[in-house]
Length: 174
Image (cartoon, one colour):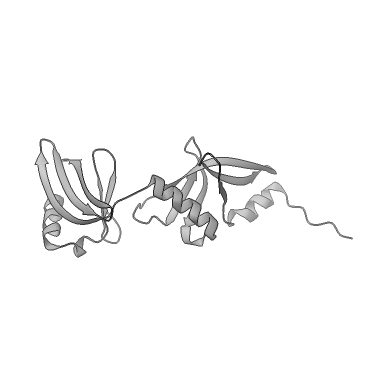
């Protein structure tokens, strides 16, 4: 009778590198990543962090421990099994909410700031940006705006905005 093949820790790690991450939510709400390291099972609390570009929320998601060290990189969220997909998606919704601007109602100067009033997919918002800060152009034509509180707002398709919104946005860009 033959013995089952035993994998060395290095072989096990290599075999699992392409496998879906083993994730679960602990009773206290923390997301836990189970891994095999040096032949031992290790459970690490992690948080999901989107890598740049932030407009592509479903690609390149880093699972990081409490010290910010990456424990696992997920290249495509859509490639995960349903349970892992749901856990990571919940983390991203809780941690990385980026409202999408659907209309720009006003941009008014205030001292060294601009006061924005916008409509987003999550309702109307008002925020401030520094006059010297520039909007970040994204691949595919989108624009990312960071306010003075470091919150992000996305104009996914500036050319699809109404004419008034486009005029206000482009005036700010010039």
